[in-house]
Amino acid sequence: MAETVKNATVHNTKGDLFTSFNVDDFDIPHGKDEVWRFVPLRRLNGLHNGTFPAQTTENVEITGTPSEKISKTDPRVGRSAAPVDRVGAQAFTSAQEAHYVKFAAGTVTTEPVQITTTGAGTDHTTFAHIIVEVEEGAEAVVNLHYQGSGTHADNVEFVIGDNAKLTVITDASWDDDAIHLSGHTAVLGRDSTLRHSVALFGGNVVRIIPRVRFTGPGGDAELLGVYFADDGQFFEQRLLVDHAVPNCRSNVLYKGALQADPSSKKPEARTAWVGDVLIRANAQGTDTYEANRNLVLTEGARADSVMLLHKAVNGQTSLTSLPRDTFVDIPEYGENKINAAYSYGGPKLLVQTVEKLSGLSVDHYVEVGMTGVSQMVDAVGGVNVCLDYDVADEDSGLVWDTSQGTCQTVDGTKALAYSRMRKSDPTGDVGRGQRQRAIISAVVSKVASPSTAWSFSRQDALVDAGTNALTVDRSAGTMSIAQMVLAFRSASGGGLTGAPPIEDPAYSPEDADIGETVLLRDTTAPDFFSKLRDGKLTAADFNQS
Image (tube, rainbow, N blue to C red; front, side, top):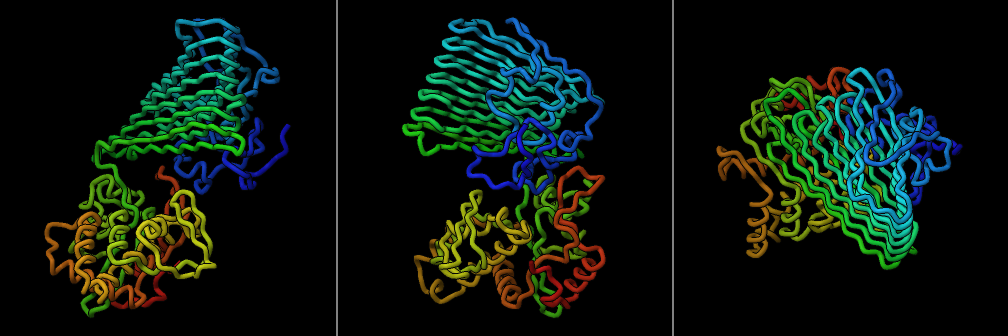
């Protein structure tokens, strides 16, 4: 049995993640874990922490070819890979046996083999382990079909021999209340071929993790996926193709669509897709391609950061950042993260939510697209921003070397990465909001600087960039926008910027299935907004971290 290793163990690459068949070797995941950060853990019916409903025997039916049930201690089990997370290990630990399908060497199966898993119902949990082996020179087509309701987790292994070919079609047609987490692992021999397709339309929460590993040259893997998320559905797919030998090919293409009814009381439609291709040092001649494309059919976008610019009667100006995950009461929708207001009802509902929280009347709305802001940064000749620690953040693309100074002049590309970086910031979204304010403030300052005012080329570029970056409400005329710019500069220059007092940056409400949120401090936040309205704020009133 593998030595117990915790999730925080340092590893060389994503292909070298800790794996184990033993559920006790994994910590219980939480929302801050990288591999779980998108998943609504409270909706998993306890698959992640062992509190799942009563386990019953899985209903797996295999037709079209002989199959057998084998012990989990059989040497044919676990050849592709062990699970990389706790749910996968839970599925292996809890499954009673493994379902084994073999296509003998040199055979060609013309009709698809059907492997159908039927859920046991809403009050039951099932676990399964399925192995599909295609021996040397054989060809086969397998259809993995999921249906019904219930809570289900499984591991599916594909062992493909030399010169063999396997086509896999995964059809997740669950009822809308089903919970399904699945790990697919494939190992390809010399000159073998895998065609792996996923069609994901049903289920409440469905998470599929395909992992492909080449063991001989000439392997060819194609991973295709299509998914459609509707009201209340969450779909996540994480892929890894590990090129460790020469002259192998991989092609990954996933396409999805999201549609949600803003009037629905269900959680919004959400999808997450993470694709990684690892090319190791000895994998010369690798040919690889990867893409994910999504179509949003309804208003499902979420606000990244919400800033409240206020000028009090006494003239005091302040700029308050409301982290995107701030826990608020959305009018007619109930408690949720503040960025959900934008998803449910666009700018109008977001404004109403901010008004309810702050007690202010919002006169104008300006939507700032950070991609457009990066163009504005280039238009003004770059801006100066500061960060006092080194960063190499893969997701945002930010590389920050403090040996070059804690304050640096950055172009639009680096400014965008700077404003989007979150995972490498110990304060998370709060810090990201702070950096976004810094970028916008720096742009505003440069706009009014002589170097811009007297440069016609910069002015032209700035107008073009601003058109792409800003969306304003119809009542905001030129004078109003100018006044907002001046107020923004005044707030930034006076140090009256930051977030309201925060009680818990990782609050998980018991009665709202929305993951971790930012909880404002009940004892001081009302006083903060009262001071804001009256123009009596000081820099010490803000959460500056």
